[in-house]
Length: 211
Ligand SMILES: Cc1cc2nc3c(=O)[nH]c(=O)nc-3n(C[C@H](O)[C@H](O)[C@H](O)COP(=O)(O)O)c2cc1C
Image 1 (tube, protein in one colour):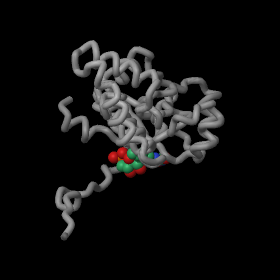
Image 2 (cartoon, protein in one colour; image 1 turned 180 degrees about the vertical axis):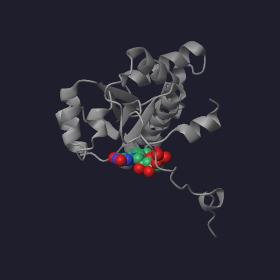
Image 3 (cartoon, protein in one colour; image 1 turned 45 degrees about the horizontal axis):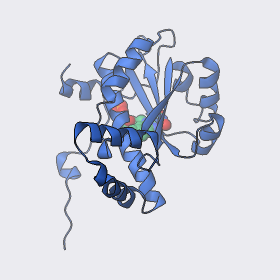
Image 4 (cartoon, protein in one colour; image 1 turned 45 degrees about the vertical axis):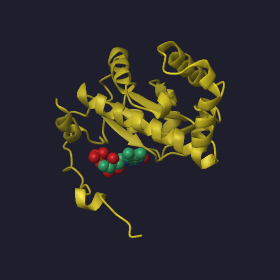
């Protein structure tokens, strides 16, 4: 499938085949593809919780508008966005820093500059923390949906859930925000899809503002 075909094939599927599992190998394959997603300073502030157990999915469904796909899909991912992924001492921040040193992209004396840059961009307000986390994790989630399409899987992103209740029920630490849940699996056999939904045209997307 070329990319144009992938963008046409990907649909948010409401009914999954609960009898058809997604292998661990396939899940790793799509996550590895999505991991190529670009991110601010390559900080990659995303994580996933993988739910396969019926009890865990049942618990999530109760907090997610009782959406049947949460229990029907063999895999449901809780996408996590790290609001503190830019901070001094954050393990990914530090790994990234060391990688930059090793590759020669930065020198030790630039650490102060780097800390100041990430602070000033991502820590001037709690909105900035959230925007940093959400935009990067959102890009990652989109890559994951396209990667899933590429290997023949179907997905459904969801923000119809009680954010605070899900955090509590799954012991998710406070540095994380949950941009979406993602159901992953195969389409229920013989499922007829509605025609694709409308999209804004180029003309509707492009705007300009008078001075
Ligand atoms: C962030 C996000 C959250 C969404 N949340 C839900 C949801 O909770 N329940 C649902 O049925 N659809 C949800 N959707 C699916 C959208 O309704 C769907 O993507 C849109 O109507 C376009 O349809 P398509 O994905 O099939 O092209 C969500 C989509 C996104 C991107």
